[in-house]
Length: 393
Image 1 (cartoon, one colour):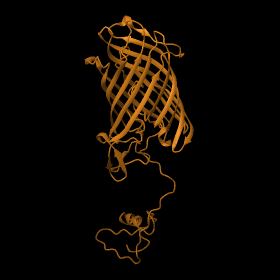
Image 2 (cartoon, rainbow, N blue to C red; image 1 turned 90 degrees about the vertical axis):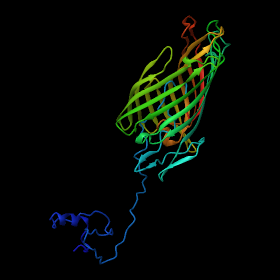
Image 3 (cartoon, rainbow, N blue to C red; image 1 turned 45 degrees about the vertical axis):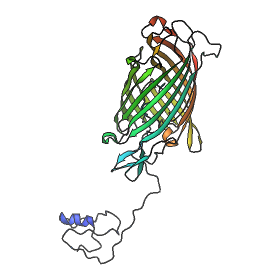
Image 4 (cartoon, one colour; image 1 turned 90 degrees about the horizontal axis):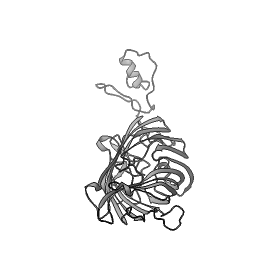
């Protein structure tokens, strides 16, 4: 009876349950081969054929791609390179034994050979290089330099390395060696002098949980040496970090709450939190303290989308220095910056907060110079115009 063309898996299931009168339940194309229980040799009255399953012409959504509510990791402050390399949020995800992400594209500046994981995806150990430069003019009105003015040039470079599927989490662990060179001109007040240059050399670390989950976690850390070239000591070694919890409220909104550890003289810990909302494909509202950002789509050039944005952040940093009288001290340079800019990136990536290049213009206010050991020399600095541009930041 099993070689009857009217029998299929549904009949066999009902037959063994003693329900031979049950209706036939179709389980697949009619030309699939008939299943025969073990021990019963099949005899086919007609040749059996196999058909190729039909695929839909509609593109399928990758369940492992990042949702609109995903945040790039960053260690505060914005004035030094971020912990998570922007552009790598669409990192390959681990599923069914292979890495797969149709949106992942190699960096134009990738420096390393690639490593294959499975048959569908290539993961680069070195994700690429980044470059950024920031300039603050000596005075906000471009007049002659005042005694309380401070001109700053910051140049940041870094390489980004990724360890994929860190501890089977389906997420990459990022290690980012970075170097920043700082040039200072001013102020011109006795006792509040600064060296002409300083540096920041550090390692960033970043990891987060899968953003498709309702609850998530973001971790970041930084260890490095921040000093004038003539004043490198134990106080030059500084640590920074962040711990953020993440809650997806809706598919288009995510809430984060946590803390940043800044390790500055004035502020050690800073609370952080806010809501990211993407009401449509062309708008992104990241109402997050201390780095809010509102952005909107402008146009497409080639394979890159252009967006304009408004943002703000807490700038500056902390360094050990040698003063004119050869004594050593530790300083903060702090300010608040409001910026307007243009950024570009691949369409599916920039809508999730990652960019391949940007340029912005803004204003720095509430600028201050703080000395740790000689607080009597603390100084309020003049406001300043800020110009900043970069690749892959």
